[in-house]
Image (tube, each protein chain N blue to C red):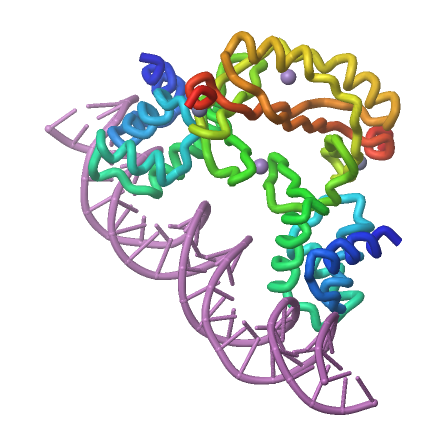
Length: 140
Length: 140
DNA sequence: ATACTTATTGAAAATTGTTTTCAATAAGAA
DNA sequence: TTCTTATTGAAAACAATTTTCAATAAGTAT
Ligand SMILES: [Mn+2]
Ligand SMILES: [Mn+2]
Ligand SMILES: [Zn+2]
Ligand SMILES: [Zn+2]
């Protein structure tokens, strides 16, 4: 479904559509968890057995370049990727099951203005990420 | 100066005080930039020539365990460390020269409450980091 | 349909960053 | 000063990622 859009974007940018790429894209696109290259490899190989790990790395690289996916930074490591979401969004991660939610609506204008004044910095960007327990993990 | 405090903390936690550790601690403590292990190695070896890179890794590991330093996550990589700061603080990084500032006073209670209600998550923690240009880099 | 160009592929090798092993050394308690 | 044992750096081992390369196949031209 939306994997089609990702593939289309790859194609538009001059990349060829191959079974290997399709498998990687479909895997990452439908995942609600951030996936490491090996995790993508293991999952995608169910769709396309001949897939090589190198191709996973190469495809993730391209998807990241095109801002289709993003790297997810966590205390345990920063090698996992997930969809980039649409527009200005941030991540909320479940510390127990790894589920990822997107959210927006953060308003840091007041803060950045204050900090800017205090430090003399011109602030261009911010990283915000929330960690917690999802509804499911919370109960059990 | 405050390097003494770091060393004291190491000592209090049962670690011995050696020239190698002193060199690493003094280097990291006085730095206004996040430093990678090799960068620490290169700088610290000016104080203590015999220092080994392995010891840098081991010392950084201990300092991180004791929450004296923290890992700094950036688009270019996540291997650099800097002082952990005191209390609830966040980082503001200069995208040009790498200078790091600490700030506090962020109020995300409203946001987390909203997101919590919307998603069902129990939110425990947040990561916030600002990126921009420091006063110096801004002008030239 | 067919031929053609060249991006893409996976396997293997190479590289990089980090960790482990180990015997020698030295911190700090006795 | 002696003694125990944490710490050290060099070398080896390891893991993750990248590069090389010849074979293949995507997509365009014919
Ligand atoms: Mn990171
Ligand atoms: Mn905060
Ligand atoms: Zn969960
Ligand atoms: Zn600067």
